[in-house]
Structure formats: C-alpha cells, structure tokens
Image 1: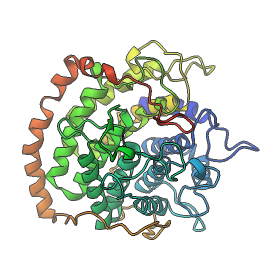
Image 2: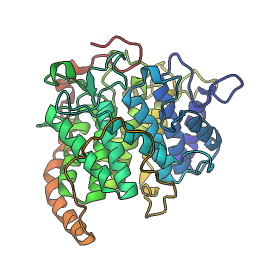
Image 3: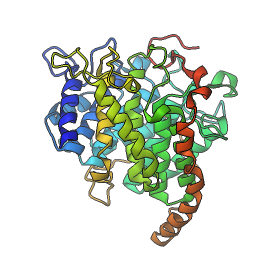
Image 4: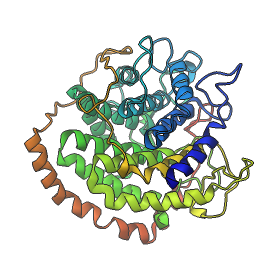
Length: 449
C-alpha cells in the first residue's frame, strides 16, 4: 500500500501539467511548447498503467477523453493538427497506449468510437504500408512524409516501435501475420546494425541517404527497452528459444549501458542537457523491463534489483519544490537525495513507471483475446499505402513444444545472464563516455544532421 500511496502522489503531480480538460484547451495534449505530441500519448499510457496497478480510477475519464480526441478522422492517431510533421514513432507511441488499454482491459470506449485494439491495428496497417524497400533493403523512415525534416533517417524509435507493436498484436490476437512482420522487422534491424551483431547494444538511427551504411550509435534508454520487451513478448508468444536468447542478450546490454552502480541513467544526464523528450525516455525502459519480467520470467533475477534500486533513488528525487508540497520529481536518480532542480511531465511519468515496476509480480499478465481481453479486433483498420509481403512464416509451437522450448531456453540463457551483475558493477562508465551527447534528431523542429 505504501507503493500505491506514493504512486498516487506522483500521478497527481503528472496530471497537474495537463490543461486539456480546461475550457478552451485541446483534450489529449500537454502544453506545446515545450512538450511534443508524442509525450502526451506517453502520459496517457502511464496513467493507464497507474489505474491497472493500483485500481485507482481517478484519471480514467480524462484518459479516455484525451486519447479518443486524438485519434483523427481515420481512427489512426493521425489528427490533422499533427499530421504535417508526424513521425512514425509519434504515431506508434499513441498506439502503445491503445495496446496497453486493450491488454489491461481499460474500460472500453462507447460503441460509436474505435476500440483500443483497432486503433493499434490501424497504426500497424499504415506503417507496414510505409515500409520502404527502395533503400537499405527495407525499413521504416523516421518521418511519415517525405518533405519532413529527418525523413532520410530510418531509426530505432520508429522501426523498434513497429516491431513491438507487431509482437503485441500477435500475442493479443493470435494472428500469425503480425508475428511474421515482427520477424521481418527484427531481421532488417539486425542486418543494418541498429541492433549490434556482437554485443546487442541498440543504436538510434541509420541514414537512408547512405543506404544505411552509417549508424548513429547513441544509445537511449527507450530504444533498449523497446527491443527488450519486443523480444520477450515474441518469446512468450512463440516459445522459440531464439527469442529467449535475444531477450537475454539485449538485457545484458541494457544492464551494462543504462545502470551504472545499479541505478538507471539517461546518457544526456552527465552534461545536464536533457531536453523534454529525453526526460521522458526512462518511462519506457522502466515500463518495458517490468513487462519483460512478465513475458520472460527467467529475466526476473537480473531485472528486479535494477528496478528496485532505481525506484528507491527516484523517490528520493521526488522532493522538488516546483510543487508547493515539495513532491515534484527530478530526472537524475543517481544523485539520490539531491533534487536536480528539473521538473516536468517526463520526469513525473518516469518516476511513476519505475515505482509501479516494483510491484509487477503482483499484477496480472497482459491479457489476450483468449485470456479475458475484451477489446474488439478490426484487422482492416486504417489504410495501407502499399502491399508489402510479410516476413518468413513462423509456426507457433504446440503446447508440448512450448514446454520443450522452455527447457531448452534454460540452457541457453544461463551463459547470457550469468555475467551481467559482474559487468554492471565493474567500471561501466569507461566504455560509454563518448556517447553522452545530446540527441538533436528526436524532437520536432530541431535541426537534423
């Protein structure tokens, strides 16, 4: 109950930044500037998690109103006021929120509105229609429209998000087409090196103007979290040990890259130059490491101490003076009791998710359409700009095959995980100092290299 009480305080602080339910404001959106549209979608996902973990429905009405107001004319999270500079990652992060609602049985919208599941299906259908084989052997561009700044990049926030969406849709619906696409996207990201073929580090983007022969090797927490959870979900769905191996190896990289001294950091924190987008990123690594525990329980001994240590540090940061009651949360959890002076919805939702992650073992596993999920499927939602062949067919194992796969998995993962804690505690900063650069390519309106 103490965790839920603390979460209530943090959630209240998060919602205090939202003005969309006030007269003359736009439902669903945080104030812009400085907060971009995708961050609003992330906030609603955090509040759905808050309801699911605590049972507190205080914010359910504004969450439903906010999400449904932003679905756009085609029920695909492409509202006209955002479409000009829409990124595939922006659209995808709203789809994540819709999927979270479906998997948690968040109260369904009225019958006159699209279902949570169909909103995610619409985003998936549209994004596979944007898959571009003309350069790099495939891949999704960062931006939706060619004239937009940064279109030439094919990045992990977009491709990794589509990978995870495909994995979650496969698990929820049991439609093998989605799993085929998850395989296809993983294979492409591996081929171009967005997932390092040696150490499984997850890099930010590659440039289609160079046929994806160069990489931006900056490593952000949300990218690692996206791929980690996607692999764990694919393992949960298929029982295939190859996904267990990928999960274990990405987890090893995540533990090394993002947890010096066992506490989660963002790479920009050392310079103190994190922008509002980057202040949000730890939200997703926190959320998706917790999901990974549910989807791939063999990861629990590694993940749980990292989440608990980070949550304790984060709570000591939640004594900032931005709110009158000194409960605003900072970003630099590694500073322990010293509030870093920063505040914002990104810091609040990251603190909320890391706090909730500590009670993940008491929560129901994300639902599917065969385990109690009630969100209605619409496989033809949205619109597809082209007809793109899915990836290699992958047959899910039978129940007996899954049992055998779990046994084989135990053999494969021990070697991958056994050295993780040694690596976490032994001189991590020496290999990452060159990566503490401010990411200028993420936010809308910034120059892109």
